[in-house]
Length: 275
Image (spheres, rainbow, N blue to C red):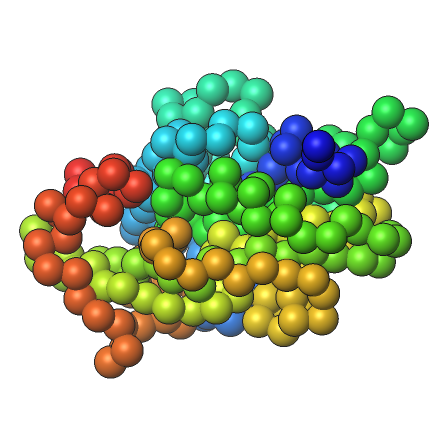
């Protein structure tokens, strides 16, 4: 017999939080994030729109668990042509109602997310006080079963006790996709291990408490009940010249030979071979 917590986790919509060229305080450390001219450079925006169209959006469209809502935090200051392109790309991939593009002025990302959560999950006697949240960057992707697996992992954790309580599920294994080559046929894919990486980190927390943008992803989960899931790769992290997180291929990354024909890639990351 399922507990009330397990029933809640099984039914609750998962909020996927994604930042697209948001100009404000969001945890990024790159030069792009601090300079509006660099962030909204036309060539960079074209590249980021292409990555969004190629990785995160098809990854969400292919999820085996479709009970999620995508919140895209963007910027009012972004050029109009890019705002239109963003809307068009989302409409081509996801059904209306499954995503919200949220342009905001300069500010703090976690405060904008808090406002969105308060509006989408209003308080009420028939409403749960907890929100399930996960992070997906605009140049990364999920395996087709990440949301379903995160939901199962969260159901195995103890229920939330008070408004300051949090629960976490993290996936330690994924792929690193090197896009630095000018020719798509020479893109390289690697096995990549990163416990408590922000990518795919799933959190349960009170709707009025901290959200997924307001935590230190490598340290905060250790202070609360959490589940670290290894085994199969569950995410793909891209590497290119416009990364916001200063990632690069390291000696610890193991190349996946002939990756476009790899059985796991084709089954659980079906959008990758088409790159």
